[in-house]
Amino acid sequence: MAKHFPSMEPTHREFISRQRIFFTASAARTGRVNVSPKDSAALRVLSPNQVVYLDMTGSGNETAAHLLADGRLTLMFCAFEGAPLILRLYGRGRVLARGSAEYGELLGTEFGNEERPGTRQMFVLDVESVQTSCGYGVPLFDYVEDRDTLTRWAAAKGDVGLREYWHAKNMASIDGFPTGLVDSESPVS
Image 1 (spheres, one colour):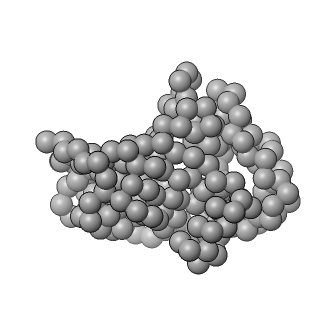
Image 2: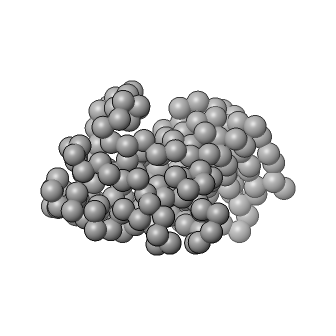
Image 3: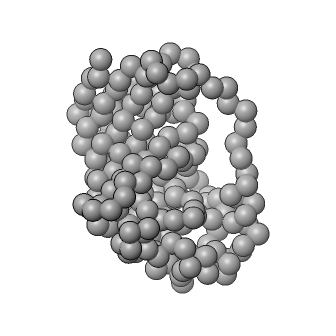
């Protein structure tokens, strides 16, 4: 039932645009595999073979560490309403540091120069292949509303508090891999 594609087709892009959540999966050659849920409002499809998303401050920074160590990244989207479908984007990811030229350009062109409080970095996925599968086993869920807890928490921390948090919690992965997050001099939104 799975189908493979070399890039995102228009129907894939349209499906992605309707989703409220997606999941990331990453790993280094050794250590744990990380899977994280993400808010689809932070994701943009740049081309049939590239996506970017704004990464929010979290309790860890596993994806950044894994991308520096290995580069593999998978994004998964599931239909929780309507017709069943699972869509995976496989490829190589990279971190765009806040304050870098490419970060600034994408922030302007794709996100209207707006960062939510707590935005930490961006991740770009260069898509090498796309897979769709039936999704028959994915349950149906009704969307209620977005949570604003993370945004309120980050706003309450402020610039200095977020930098301190990054240095305390986001500089290395659970397995001790560096995350490359050394953006302590750039402003925090």
